[in-house]
Length: 268
Image 1 (cartoon, rainbow, N blue to C red):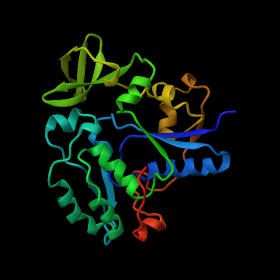
Image 2: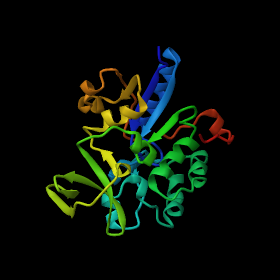
Image 3: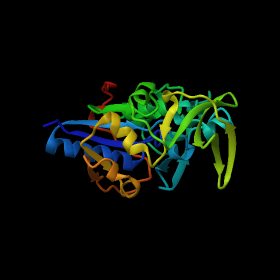
């Protein structure tokens, strides 16, 4: 009998995480109490969509929602670079700090102030750690060269290549590479040599690619994710629907008691 490996996946989803990610974390912890084993967070930091990191906060007086997000150094980076390569320009954090008291209390603002990562994926991950959400959870990153070298071969994928002095995530389409501009518009790039360390999956090939390294026994997903996962490619996995949570697309702005008291949270 192998020990259970409970996994959930998510791209960076706001500098304060969306509530649906926290629901996955809480579901994993509940399941771990029931069956034991370890929890693995498959952090899909090689996704590129800047909309994923929009952070929806409620005004403390009016309760009106506001959307905050990162800014990026240039248009190419914003549209096409993977999240681990989207750099945060100088001044963004300071400007955002000035807005935060309208929405959250100082314990959460202090975590934001103490986070000093230079790219979007690292910044979000350190925020989640700083909030105490990932204690005892192993984080595995899709952008890691070591992970990519260990993963199985797939026929449907993107590659991270150089374009306009940036790293971009380009779809392999026959003998060309394509950058999606929106709608039916694409930029075509010539095919270039690439290594396995540059490959990352599409939505349809992600589960098999991930599972070839993580070997999870249980996978936690939301209803939308359950609908497109190719479960037949991983019959050994027991799929678990995450627990319900209200306002799932909004930011989670609660803290465990240790974080509220200002105690040091170990980053693992």
